[in-house]
Amino acid sequence: PIYVAVASICGHPGSDAIRDAQRSLPRRFDDVLAGPDTDRLDRIRWRRDGCHFSAEGLDRHAEAWLEVLAGAEAAASQG
Image (cartoon, rainbow, N blue to C red; front, side, top):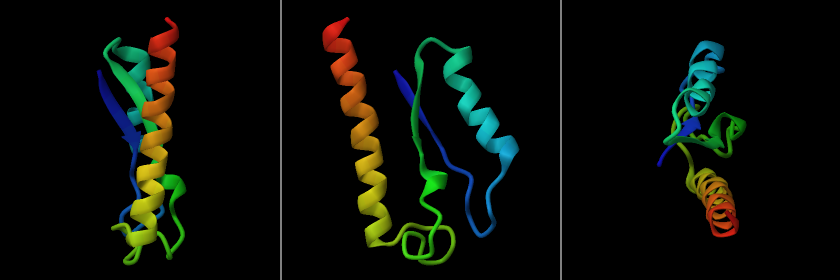
């Protein structure tokens, strides 16, 4: 499968159009699954320059991906 994160913040508050397009992909394609919403990591301590993740932001980013992937693995083992 392909995982698509919601990611639109970079030097601005983000884009609803981009977020909506990213969220629509798992509904449109069977082999596309939803990744984490990284736009939730919007505090300056997580994005050192308003775009790129700081060390703490990268840790939270990795945790969000782990949660998504672990959930997918658990669902696959049950199904």
